[in-house]
Image (cartoon, rainbow, N blue to C red; front, side, top):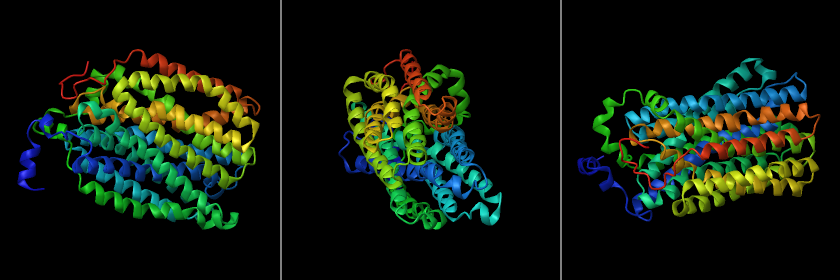
Length: 449
């Protein structure tokens, strides 16, 4: 980077912000946020889809089908458990040395882990080494994605003008379901193979593709400038010895309430895009390829929903927009479970489109700005990442296992699971009541009230 650019970037943060989202620099930043997040979540959601359809048959052989599926979902949960740790570690360095370098590292880690999963021999060939290695690689995936979202979101938000922060931050959020579309379509394509070929080597192709996607993402990310708000505080880096400790000691309520709000969105993801896929394919007997294509459409609708929700959050505020999604989730939880239990493909499609395209998108659209506005710049990467990753771990990581257990408890009926799901939205709504609207918050302030 030239001396001129360095000089320009070390003046006050406000002077460095891009005044418009339409400038070439800002378009590059938004593209980097979207594409980087899409690539990371392509890999992460790819694993979730494979956990629903493949890993129980390849890496957990010799077990009864329900136990093998539970074990497969357990490895999925391990990745989610690693996400908060990734958020803490990467957030620490993101707040200490900058957002950009951390994002490059997280992307390289994710691409390497996903490629190795695609090369991993089955249990039938190497025994217990296979599932152990799978778990280790899943942990690396979790650590990597734990550091991705916070940095991608902040790079966009901290460059954007105040009145467009919600929309700018949403590009990282839109990247997630966009990556899910790619992952789902990739798996859907290889499911057209005969079962023997699909389970033998076909499922590996989408994982191996990730190395090329990561290469593209790194090229784009290397061309993006560091966050101006971080650069404005760069000379105070030594004062921020342990951002994590400051987050949990000074802002514990923000962490707890933000997590309870965020997990409402993530229960939708864990239930509808992981557990429900396995349920309608394995238990109901729906066509695997058709189900995956519907899932891809649902993810695409989520991108559209996030776009609208984020834009309206800049006009109306984060809280009112997110509360619409939370209320819709509480009202629709039981009807959605009824549609799943009916066993009709078209009802499954409606249920998925409502859950992902409306409920999840409306909550998730403003969520990036919502979490960022809970913390000051010096600890924002750590704080926002911790809230986001705890939300995903509690909301999505354990949901498939919990719902599977609740269905067993209910003797096959989905009503108990639906009631518990509705309760998570009610808890989120109560948590939201204690959070101040952040649309007008001054992100350059020393403290966030």
